[in-house]
Length: 195
Ligand code: UDP
Image (cartoon, rainbow, N blue to C red; front, side, top):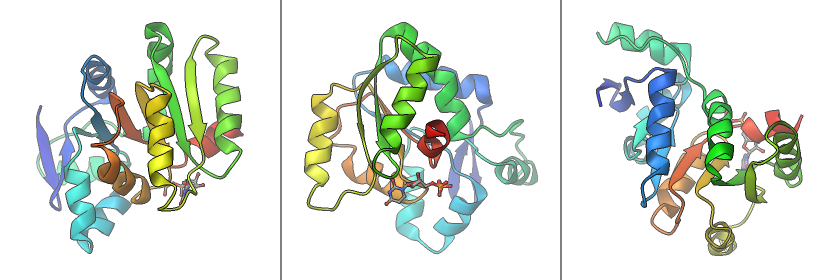
């Protein structure tokens, strides 16, 4: 897959359709695949934070989120035609996940929000298997318990909505322990879905 380098962050040259296709491919594998949606803010943050840059570059797919990244990519000589937000990608995957019977775990946001997001998702996707939810304000000591909750739910897909940087770093730190096939950082998506 082609990619470009935007200030030392790898951004994959995928439009919406291609990005979705990749995510669906990941579902058919046995090892975890990580999807991030870097925007200009994240790329700027990573300039002062080598660790975060390394985290961003460690993903299996970096979908350009934000018109800024699309614009920058033109500047860097390779055209990315559209912006793809984590929220849009997550929502476009839902009917596929429902159809395939994939198990979905929602992690992040304030206590109660993920439950509400689940409720709203089920109104739209009646047969979607949401196998678990957990808020995004747990302590370091609780971390292994949360990982265990996710693994014992047998989730195929883990959406992590703990805001940029925090969610990517959490995914990076825990990916070896997680047994999901697709793990995606989705920012404030659960707040949107809970409304
Ligand atoms: N959040 C979380 N744990 C934290 C900090 C934030 O789960 O320790 C959640 C917060 O409740 C909100 C989301 O992460 O739902 C951040 O949303 P925002 O719109 O700021 O996302 P960003 O644009 O930073 O990716």
